[in-house]
Image (cartoon, rainbow, N blue to C red; front, side, top):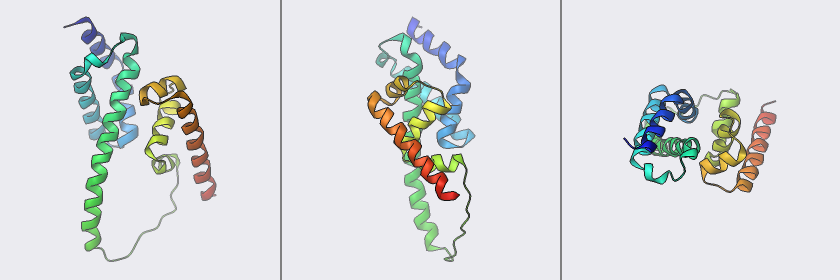
Length: 161
């Protein structure tokens, strides 16, 4: 095993709870989160050549997890749309309306690019520069998206009051 592969393996094992928590924050399901972490590990070892600097293992691997989770959500969204079309054909026409609000619901209402910035910055405690590296975005773009996301969350919270 090459030295780089060994470093990646040690990092993945050492930080496995954090990786799981990040995946779970996107998919909200234990089994799906575990699948995402497992698939991310596979992708990491398959594309280990893309890790140019061993000191960047953390941000490199987080980027893989985020992208894998987002890919999973996109696929699931396509399936849900198909399921909703089928279910609507059998629907009685009544709709349950609940005024249920919490931070999780507000985060889920955010567009994907804003949700990722909030999760990485405030839930995973990354610096803005690290968030930019993980998401492959400009630092100023991340700052702008963070500001916009916080503004959107404030509006959602105020609408509930």
